[in-house]
Amino acid sequence: MTSGDSADINPVNIVLADWGTSNLRLWAMDAAGHIRAEHRSDRGMGQLNRDGFGPELDRCLAAMTVPADTPVLICGMAGAAQGWHEAPYLDAPCDLSAIADGAVRVEHGGRDIRILPGIAQRDRTAPDVMRGEETILYGLAQAGTGDARVCLPGTHAKWARLSRGHLAGFRTMMTGEMFALLGEASILRHTVGISDWSDDDFAAAVAEAHAAPADCLGRLFGLRAGPLLFGDAAPSGSARLSGLLIGAEIATGMAAGDEPLCLVATGGMAERYAAALTALGIDFDRADAEDAVRNGLFAMAARIWPERELLETDA
Amino acid sequence: MTSGDSADINPVNIVLADWGTSNLRLWAMDAAGHIRAEHRSDRGMGQLNRDGFGPELDRCLAAMTVPADTPVLICGMAGAAQGWHEAPYLDAPCDLSAIADGAVRVEHGGRDIRILPGIAQRDRTAPDVMRGEETILYGLAQAGTGDARVCLPGTHAKWARLSRGHLAGFRTMMTGEMFALLGEASILRHTVGISDWSDDDFAAAVAEAHAAPADCLGRLFGLRAGPLLFGDAAPSGSARLSGLLIGAEIATGMAAGDEPLCLVATGGMAERYAAALTALGIDFDRADAEDAVRNGLFAMAARIWPERELLETDA
Image 1: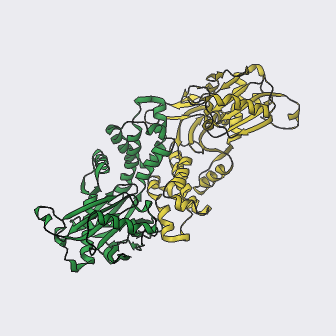
Image 2: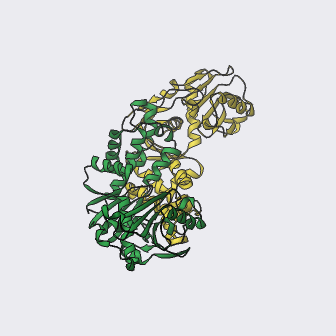
Image 3: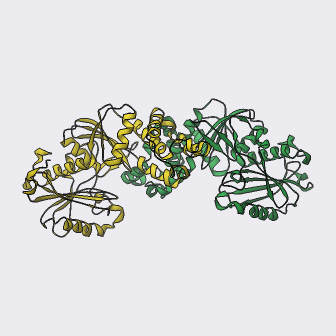
């Protein structure tokens, strides 16, 4: 995928969409892989009922002035049972290229719209599911990532094991949701909510939880007791809560293999995880999550619609 | 402390109260340690502002027809900074007999009312606090518990190390609060909330988390994914959530010493923890939490008001 002076001479050929629980992101692409327009909406699956997806997509496509005959490829929660149209899970382990074959077609306004499946791990001791992250992983593989452990931070962080386009397995950690619940709804809110962030306190908590992840749950109440006993001299509650949860997550994720680590995130979340890994002395590559999901969608669109002659070679 | 035919011949000599965050329990006792009346209220600290404690106590004492000159001894959150009247923490390690010396007197309606302090652990690496549990521990020590690890389940479970009336240290685990938050407010609520309880699934989850407590956080999302993938054939979500959290708690608590374990709880919580410990093959003694807190209060009342000639020997 490239960008450059030629971007203004090719028409929109395909629309790519990452439709998650909280957000919808769309990119109108030309056949050479240039972004011709992009659009964001906060109408994720969580804000829509089944009948709301089509009109929302129409609204976004109109805002991007996309022609009526341009196909749309969607990944993420739009394909969940409670989404727009269910795209049944593929089963891991699997080759990620199989995702494109599992796309389901949605009937809506005569446009060719496909939704990609998520991936299920039907392991009774470690059942797990993903929707959207499989497309990020495919984007990484297309960009040349070989054997890797991939860390995808988030509300439900995923750690996946990737080997040249093959997904060996994965695990979801509820790190982001735990941080929000404990910081906003538990007794810790009294002290976490009012605390300033401290990079040093974050790094110390990461190291502590990484060294003894079994003790993570047993250290949480200290975020309440510390400020009660030491006032402002206590460590930052928010930095410490984040550090304890991320440190424990990294310990669990790193225990599951020895491939090189790739951190795939965007914005502040990317910086926070990078700081945690750096504090632990763990080497890692980085990739941008938005670039990866768009690359993955583009490469799958090329498989689904070969007649559109999308230029996969740039991806 | 005894009960028997003589209970109806001695007048009320003292009132004991355990005033927690959610509830208030009161016992009117005679000098021989018999319960002459008891009363419960759901007006814990969480439901009262500072001016509400006195009237609520009056209401309860009237319901128990307690004479105006009968002293009242209170333990628990009534002594917190945000409670009725702050009773500053004692510092652990400490002899539990020192609690009585830290009681603060409350001016209210001419009655002799004292509130017992909690205990703080001013350790920067493991800061912790308790209010109420110190009185339970004193009650256990009075009843002859020597060297012990004591497990006190609850919203904020406490694990304490006790040696003949000396408190060496303690740790709070937010097990009960985590169970409620995850089961009611997280994505797990969709599957945990609708599941039937299963003793077998509980025992299996306890064993799993106890064997690998570092993995506890990484197993939680499976409570969502399992029912998505296996439907009714998936383990009980509520039993598994409880089991994972309690199993991890027990692993942490048991790692902190090798004294005999004493489980101090009441009702369904006592049964659940007993089942967990039994599933793990861990030997333990049991004590009733209500008996222990009442015994502790009675023994401290005897120290605070020697002129009332309370019979400590029965305790």
